[in-house]
Length: 196
Image (tube, rainbow, N blue to C red):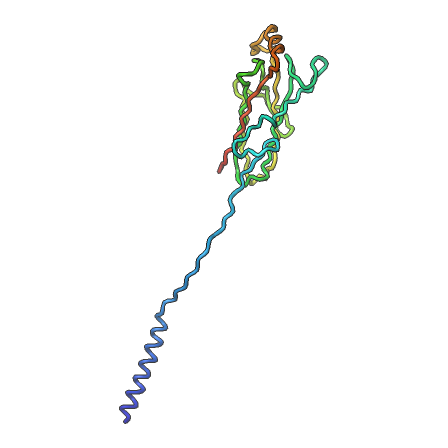
């Protein structure tokens, strides 16, 4: 009978051992799923209060200013008149660094061939003169610098006195006779994200 009790106890001990061994080597398996939600950087730059999304035209927002003088009325261009237009950039809704580039040129349909883009200033600073043949303004804006606005003032004039003037006095007069004739300047503004 002792053998039966020992055999019975050994069987119970073996079952308990197997149970603990199985529990020790059991694999845990659970599943969970989810979707990470990541915000996308904003890219909504405005020029003269107009969003540039969709390659918008700036024609209605470019307002030339000619202050006039003792010999020329304000608000118009005439030989030797100097004026300007402003490009006001708003970067508050741009979350990345970028480069802006402004290209300015006389329009081929302008009745005034002697339009000269003479220079520019940034945020009311000193006027920078353009070099010969180059009418481009370019600058990097770093996100970390926290620049939210920039005003570029572009200076233009009806060149009637320099060696670069093309039109003579007769042609100047003929330009003034064109009904609804306009002195036209093309402005192209582009923004490109940078990682520098």
